[in-house]
Length: 150
Image 1 (cartoon, rainbow, N blue to C red):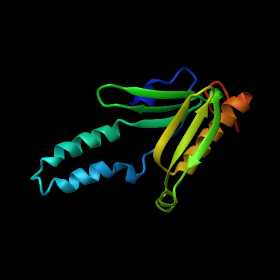
Image 2: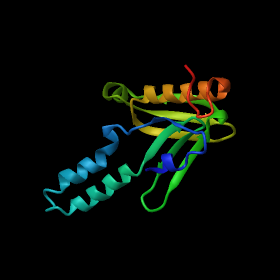
Image 3: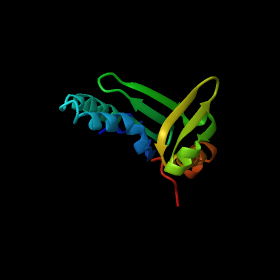
């Protein structure tokens, strides 16, 4: 059970989780490739990078957007759905070809949140927009458990 599951408030549900694209794992790939000429020493770097990547959790719940990083220490960024002002998608030409991109959220004031190198960034943007529409713009459409009524 990860941070996203542990930090749910009563009645809050996870709407979507966001995965990193394989291009975000380039350090892990480099360490693995270097492990042959370094006689396995680079495997320590690969192990650290694998654990670091596994510790990243990102997603949207029925009340907030969450990004958690850290192995021993924990850093979280959370933005309430009600405080989101803009949801931007940034995708380079390579990102469009390979299927990755960044989703940038801007909140009230100077708060912002960036989800970098997401696999399927357009789907992540849509998930945030749908959660916003369901739970902020039309809160009566959601029942007590945070699920949409049919």
